[in-house]
Image (cartoon, rainbow, N blue to C red):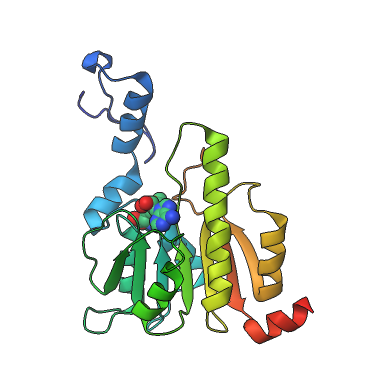
Length: 237
Ligand SMILES: C[S@@+](CC[C@H](N)C(=O)[O-])C[C@H]1O[C@@H](n2cnc3c(N)ncnc32)[C@H](O)[C@@H]1O
């Protein structure tokens, strides 16, 4: 690896990987981008497990989802950046945890978070999550992304399906006034899901936080102010 070179802004390329290291061009570019990513450096400095933590921080700074004492379900939580942010902002502790996280990958313990190593698509998952939380959540957050197959369209469809299942879960468990945030893709969310969210929540937004890479089609769907199940059922009649 060459020494960092001086540069202009925070996104200027500073560290270059020598071509002769035997890496494929695509891997070399990924490594260079990672090493020069200011969010990666901030995550390390501030003790976050992932640069993704800053996406939730930026969204929460703007939309105020994570109030002290709020109960939160974090879907697709590993390696734990969002759980860390949620626990810190709600003041969740190990003695009185208010965050329950789920992922089929393992994850080191996050203070103030109960972790379920389980597939969210397992039919038993919704009940297990509510049982672990001890009641209905104020906020459901989902950063779930399907594993990449190399076929972009397939990956998008699978992640959008996860978003839709998460949305169904949110409207069946949230407390009135609660919020739902989930990863989706530009142009990806089905109208049916959007319509359902618009009927069920006071407001629905598409959010692209600065920490989400510009070149990525990733986007977050935010539904604020759950109207409650009774009202929703009446609206559908
Ligand atoms: C982008 S990562 C989440 C990063 C996390 N928000 C953070 O800040 O550290 C997406 C996660 O979704 C998980 N995931 C995807 N499908 C899932 C499923 N069906 N059940 C549980 N977790 C799932 C993956 O295992 C992966 O860990």
